[in-house]
Length: 635
Image 1: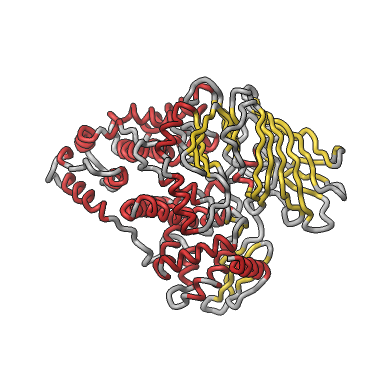
Image 2: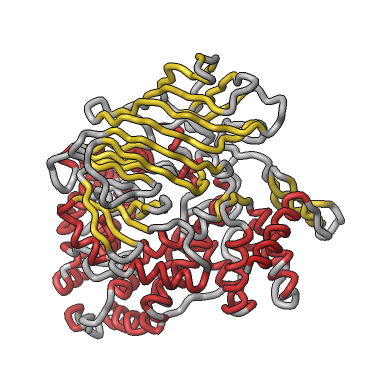
């Protein structure tokens, strides 16, 4: 194994400085993949020399370590303190360090015990403001004293009333994609990896946790110390503060949450240790010591966030029957694809999310069986098609062009499901055992590195494309990565478990049977989602009443089923469901669940009025990202 790792390391080095026969040129700044068209002219298929979403200058001065000392002020809704930044000069004559910030108040910058000059550039609409620091000749670190804004995009401050316990306030961060700069001045680019230490000062009754080494038995004294020894990109730096408690689920896994939901969360996610063991067996050792979960308040804007050692999780997946735990598998899978091997820019997000979504399906198969794997793959393919039907061609490309655009625009099912489908085709072409061998080598070759799409293509050319030249082609790879849509002949996920659902739906729609005659007593959540998501676009009020009367869909407490049903109700103006719709929009902040509902409501004047009322009531409890995504629908 040591020899194999040495060979892989040498191969990776060659990729950084080499040039292959097909014209793939490589440099420390990225990869330019070239090919000749029919006229013999060279086309640039991919070129990446910079991160369009960072002002920083890591090619001249690269940040290597952060040491944070911050105090949490819930009354002022601010973090204040300082960060000491260790850096390495890449070019010997470099005399300035440029960092990313957004809405930070910088009071002073010091180096070698003295104040040094700094300047803040003009604010950009979504990138923030560049902080330029003049470096003394001999300095290898600087200390920045600063304070965050109450409106910081990466922080959400919740009042006691907005928490489960209703007694103490709550704070959590969300750094991805470029929100770390709103609470830390740093090089906020995924191609810059840093280690970090932190001292966080809080009210004594609260507990702080971070994406670092957390001690479940730490003394609750209002001063907490953290260390992250592995180098991570800035978007994985995370902090939460609240009335948190811990419960172990396995030898290396546990859950933090407010006490009211701790037992339910631990029971729901008790298979996390089994997922961890199964993933290690196929794809290599887990590199992060522990894998714990933090269950956040329902305002968390995402399903989960893969912060290393401590994934942040929405409570909306606590369904009581483990039907939605694929989200846990997804965040765990990021420990290999994303956290260990990371996209170098947000254009390359599919390298994180496509690989992770593919691994998610594999983990679900290993832990819960092939039938569950097949059902979830079919639903994933349908989610992908829904986005393909809505998105412009330019946004259907894996290596999406984000120059001049807010990086939040990259988040759709394209990098997730299209990326996973591409990898599934590679698996089908070369065989699962051979593809697993490739993945294991890939994770080892690029461990704790940030890579581009071009790096991936070059690695693919030296491995699978070379070994299986009769089954794979560069042209097909380019079609997947650089063209919109899904290529013809792509894998089509299928599930026998859905055949009975199709039969029941068709029989009911044709009037052969009544809704109450549908034999659904053994249906799992995935079959219900498939039933609902594949109903005709237009249904009568009588049909909706019949379904609701038979299955009590309006009062379903499964958040995914409720989402699908409520979307049908909005599109068909089924008024008996509207009180539940209002409750749903006000109580949940997860964008995947509420954005389609706001969008559907906004399509009619009457619906927009409903949306405006719900948004006005919910806004103070929504995360800033949720507000940004949905307020356009209610204007």
